[in-house]
Length: 95
Image 1 (tube, rainbow, N blue to C red):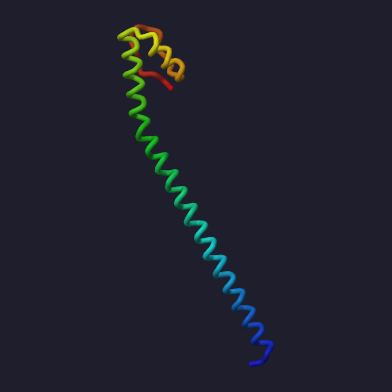
Image 2 (spheres, rainbow, N blue to C red):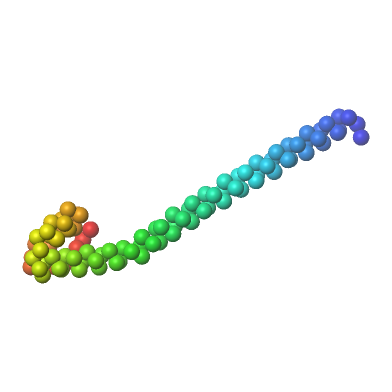
């Protein structure tokens, strides 16, 4: 084997080694991004599950505010952005 061929083969093997190392680094980066995306998906799923409970809680609070005519509770709900119905019957609030 000539010296020229040995230099070419050595250069190619170093290049391949560098590409393997870059591939490993990219794979690790992808793995950390996948973990982050998974955590965000879990938070979104939990938020969707709690939305129904939040609506029920708001409805109960609005009904209670009108049944007891509690001005403080009405004011608190209004400060939180809950639109209170004007009639005597409490309808489910819209947010």
